[in-house]
Length: 282
Image 1: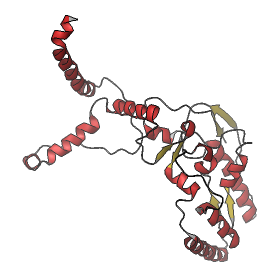
Image 2: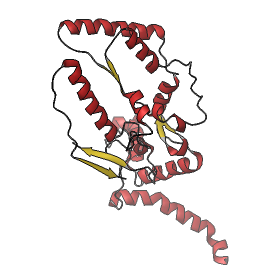
Image 3: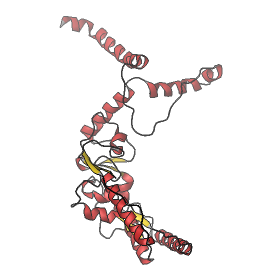
Image 4: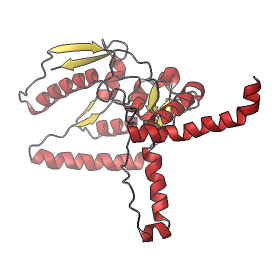
């Protein structure tokens, strides 16, 4: 105890000194094979020292950026920091990612689309629908069929997990999806609506149509849509097309392809707990 009291300042200095040099040693000796961070990254080249770049300060700025991006244990420290923010404060540093209830992840633009906060207005929708009608007529003269597809959205599919700080959707609220659908119907335009189809299948689908930590449809949902799209086109053009033949359906807890894309953007130390998904081979 007396030793600690006498030398605590020196011990503290030694610990800080070691902490400063550990990242340098890890990087220079390649001691740790870190997993790359998710998201868009830009490679920063090592700056070249010249008389002009030194005296105008450009080298120092570029060197600081290079060291910050390439320092040892950078990814690990970022993941630990993000994990603390996520676990204790339900915060994320990933742009546009929203943490919902039970750790369901969204992108804010999908929530805006569901709530109608990004509504572009009646005039714009009617104008675009009228242009689409003219386009359909021109293509019809060329014996080309036009088909509009409404893709499913995660916020529309899982509104119950949207955070409480967002307003509740009112039945009278206009959204781009609802008004475009009405406008296409009034113009008698050809469309297929996977958004409402997914919502209707939500409680009866054998396997998940959306995943918890990703923004896109599940691969099982994509398979169902592809199969339905082929059948729809066959009917529209009155021709037989090659069809999807399901060979195998693998159930796996592994989040493959884009199933964990929002989770990857969050760069957490521990992955978010998810549920099993179905992966079709066809």
